[in-house]
Image (cartoon, rainbow, N blue to C red; front, side):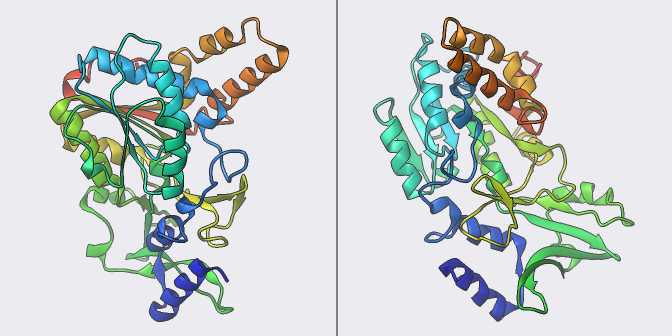
Length: 363
């Protein structure tokens, strides 16, 4: 038995159950045994692959989108570039390279990263390219204009799931079955503890005749509000790219290990556990800070509007057939609705003053 399984077993033995949220928090972020403290989680040799690892064009185009905001808002030398969950630094490296093709000065880089092993990889990859600062929490970011990108960050936040069953609120949790195995089950809770106030509107629309649930990531609000408050106060923009939808209904809990779907309870600390992002929650946090939230739009639509097809054609011009075939494959994975093009969404957060200014990819 792994050390993390032993920790979870001890909790279950002592308390009889634990919430799904607490299980995910341990499985992903335990300081010694959590999944995101492993050395190799991203890429072909890891458990999953992200858009920046698929193609350099993803980082180039999103970097130019942020550079456009820098120019549009006349941020000059005041802004910082921020990435939430920068992984192996691939996205930021491509972003920096594209930014340097413009005439704009490159802002200082600030990375939100809690994994020591990933910080080491980022440092090796990025410190020769730019001035880089690391943060454990968004609250320590400087109070100045923020140009932020978060790609596949919010899906990894621990979630709570609720349902209304026979007029009783329940929260999804982990407990033992009759054979002493871990199972996902529903735990009775008091109505007043069911969920935050902003979810009540969604709760009113629950179909009580069906086994509907609401999914909510508690950490999403403070992270988003910290970024949005800086954008509202000082200017800048946030670009959020993740798989998700426009409400918190339904069950999208999933786990991946070595690029294959697995039971979320089978390999705590060894598998990536995620859930689809509720973009309506992101939008509400932005509005509370007097920011505008544009989108979400499908990733495929966004990237094609920014010139993905033209960039691929440019890279492939005069190239060997193998490179041209690879570029076609990269484009397909990024924009095909059956791949990442539809499930992944893009939302931009901007100061209210720019809410009606046409924005590339989000018109």
